[in-house]
Image (cartoon, rainbow, N blue to C red; front, side):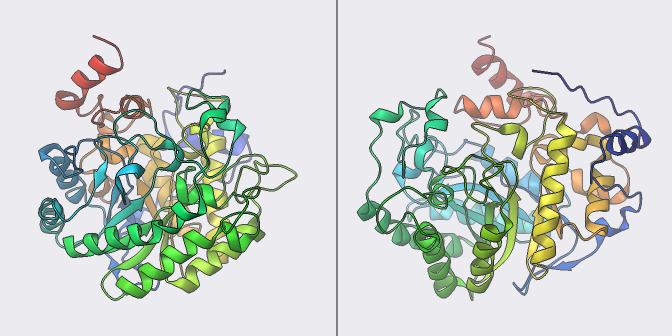
Length: 438
């Protein structure tokens, strides 16, 4: 694989590299747009600026899924970042759907802990909204720390990896899938009671709901036709809207497309799986909008197979292309969806790659109408007041995320995750112990 060091010393260097490759990455030195308030789609909520915190796994809860002091610290930092909205990491809707023994899972027994976390977020952010992300990890379920996959169909693309032996994995039944709407309902009810302002019905990265969307060859009620493949996702959105829509707005962390060859990838052209099929994508997003989704947080691919697609980076993992190409892909396809659905608040992703130049690219994308909002995940781990610094034009590159992927390396060990570079006191010892064996 080639290496792609971050060799952009000035904004002009970045512009030159973008122009040399004829990319559609926008740049604007007018940062005032970052501070503009904006309605959050049709939710009735107004955000006081255009920057949000992406959902980022922390894997630092108690065994029953409750926030710990370390979890509270993380969300307090997000609250004080200056961003206009927080977005929780994945909250499992059932025990068997957890991807980690310390993944969030909200229950009646730990509800008070979530109330304290959300109350603290609201207090420290000045009342800004926070979304609860509901998930079932599906083929990546590991509720006790070891993989226990729940898959909807055989996928040889994953069989080529270290994740599982495809021949030994039973496919989940329709009867099991029939039980999930109630589990999502119960988890959403608790999240609303805890004080979360929005509910994210997550469908991305080949977790269970995302995997249903590409169940082209599955038999039964949840496979084959578009109606069947989207049945579970649409049904959960519909129930959430009808049950809690007057108490919390609806959102989705959503794979615009899977970037996987047919029949394993949703939203992909059958001629070239690296190109989105916007006919299929738009058909589903139209349904999502009609059911009440007002905000979509865009991602693509899956970090387990194609991390360069959903989080362009300079070090760690597979880097088969110049990360600028990955950023361009994310930005231009997000722009196409925003153009088709102007009433939905689209959240753009991948901007942490640009480091100290991220504010200018974010401003360019927003000013050009390519996205409504820009989210930061890795940057939020690294730089506690990133949003305030971006809006004020005081961004300090010595505090920036350097897209080294060490947070991801740490996450893959199933231990508490953060930035070993910029938050060294807590996370560097963990990185040395679990990633370097020191």
